[in-house]
Length: 451
Image (cartoon, rainbow, N blue to C red; front, side, top):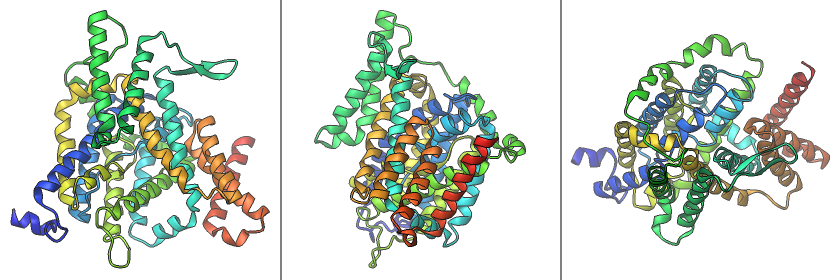
């Protein structure tokens, strides 16, 4: 025990082993929804990934990345495949751009290797500083709107309409009503002024699943959540493990590969940086100069997680803001992260239970909507009184949702910002990186239009 205390600097950070373990448990419960949401999203594509394999990949990648974070950086921060980034892979890269899931995993692998290299250099800092704060916040908020839209669409709350493009779904449909019940319940639990709001998602999912199973059994209603069976689906992990190698042979022939890799890399870098910054102060991770201690090790852990994730068969792994729940419970060291990682591994045994949630759009929709609510809070970081920043933020969010593409939203946001800054004669305030990326986006769209 003394060796554990010394390794994790338990006493130095003013905590105890018991407090760290409680914090780890709290963090895991706050983010366990990803075990159901990630397989559902990556299995809901034009080239579906095997759900059982993605479930195992999600658990393994989250476990390894989080344990590495705990042992290498000694941070109480957990990692898992990122919400929003998985939507980019599923609905953007695979369903819209026509990549096979193996090619998509190859792109994730390449972006992870690049992130790993960047984490060893000062280039990471230069990239973070190059993009205006308002654009970073707009991208995060836009992803929130995007995944919430996916949630209500998949649940049938919003449906296609030839006259208006979209309209309200059939509210007499029991599965749609169950989804609405779950979303309302999740929002109510999130809004209550009690610590229970930290677990709004997991509680709402469990209650809604219970209600759905009962309705299905008692009234014999089709489409309700139900047990999918045993562990047979997990054998598909053999397909996702090293599945990216099949995509490496063809992915380099894709003309828009650079666009995909940039989008994945951009989201990973800024998602991680944003999470680390937001939890650093309450976790006591700042030094006397206000700088994060061992941030390089934390970013390295994130990059390792992404590489591991692509190898086992899942989208980009990133740091989770839900770690703040554990930090508020007292977690201050990497010991809590090690416990979170162990719990992710143990959760593989509970696959038959998680299969109830994975196979039900009604249950995953509430996770997508509530995570969207969390991400929308980033709108407060936009410079509302700066016209180029405000317009670029608006265009970013608008194009993400209406184009059904996170990548397009980022591209149009960048181009809008640079254009309006030039119009205002503020060209010296725009970084060289922004000029280069905007020019590349213009060339990308022009070439696609011509070809």
